[in-house]
Image 1 (cartoon, helix red, strand yellow):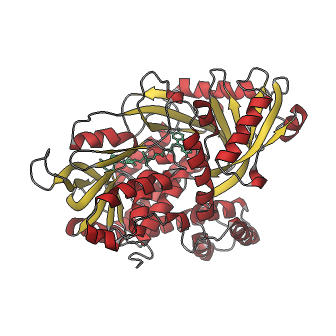
Image 2 (cartoon, helix red, strand yellow):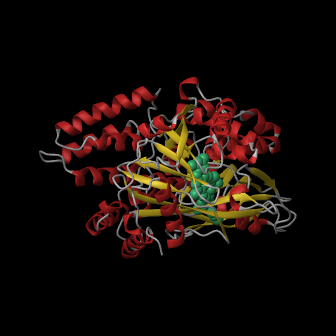
Image 3 (cartoon, helix red, strand yellow):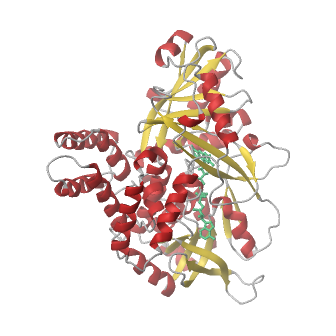
Length: 559
Ligand code: FAD
């Protein structure tokens, strides 16, 4: 299949916007979270002419606010969601195969406590079922541990309470970067995907809204204010927590609707909670939460509470923070985490399908597709991990509705299971490790910290070499972190559709969550200054952009 944009460059956005205005598409996808970009990739790789618009940045909704695990969802066994566990469990392997730099296998310990919900036998059985359902490879299957062994692998745990444990493997990812890499791949396959463009209404084949079929959308370029009409044979609404709002633009909702629950994570320095692996442990209220080490930090989450209606920043309260701190302090009594240890937080909304009489943690995570009378296809629910299968199901519905001529031109089945992500993708994890080692040696030889190699390769794959080499050229003699930081920004402006400081500091690099102390006033000014030069003095109100990123920085702590 011809690659239309083999490499995204600085002219991509204006070319793409012109195409959105002037061409007709087979399919328009609304929403650039993992669900939407997954659909765009499935469609483009089947041969559909596809467009996608995202009102904010790619992954700015729930897809940058998850627990960041590609996992089978062991806990869903408790709710008898065998189909879901089987599907997402198997998908773990596919996502890992296709993006080994973004998906890192990590041991996970499930400590069993005297007052925990399940004893050793039930846990062992649960993990055994999980291994089989999820098709876990033999080397990663569960091992049951004695209390002594648990104390050896995780000395921080409350020794008096722990009676044993289960050790298995889950995969950690960067949800926002995964979303972005899928978006970039969809563009490589000919899709026209643009961030910061919001759908405000739908277009119809005839002017009567209720009888005509949906044939596109009216949109607004949020950055420039321009109105755009995008014409398409079919439209998919993949707006996550906003799915019902967008369904309402089309037709009043009749039947199933969404319910939202809020999930909060807190980040503490690794030395305050120095866990050796991922921990997945019981909380007194019957829920389970994770403690996950990453980039010199440990993040803890998540909460699960009802939330009224979709909003960009659901916010974090001290009550949310205290819930997580208390849970961690109970499980690791020697650490005594306090509010002031919290370096950053994030909160996201789960778009779930409403079921009467069910509490937040009992609601199914299974996805569902709704088709309106005028043909708008909406998808809601689901997991980050299962994005590819969700996309496949949506595109099967789309395929069933296209003309015979289009059917001859497009593949009837999904081909994404073999599409590797990233430019010059890695064939396996060993290649990733090799590159991290090589880059690490170069950075060290220049006097820099070796950790930068891991960060760069896991963020940008093989593109890390280009970023490092350009930065190295600009460094006088010794390693200069500022130069590397600015080179990353330059790369993201040129090749990753960064339009605002938050696109870079939150979604492309995750710095706001994991390196909040490095986002100084001076750095914010440097970022804004560089963006102003790159995009143009008049492109945005740069003072407002600087104020906004400062506000996001401040919001990053509880209110
Ligand atoms: P979103 O990511 O929210 O994307 C929808 C997009 O639509 C948004 O970017 C929004 O800006 C855009 N949009 C809305 N309205 C418009 C409009 N009018 N025009 C244009 N664009 C619009 N899953 C896992 O597999 N593993 C995990 O570890 C995990 N942990 C989680 C933890 C938490 C706390 C939460 C909340 C969820 C977690 N999930 C996890 C689930 C997973 O994150 C979500 O299922 C997934 O991210 C949803 O993606 P989405 O694309 O459907 O929604």
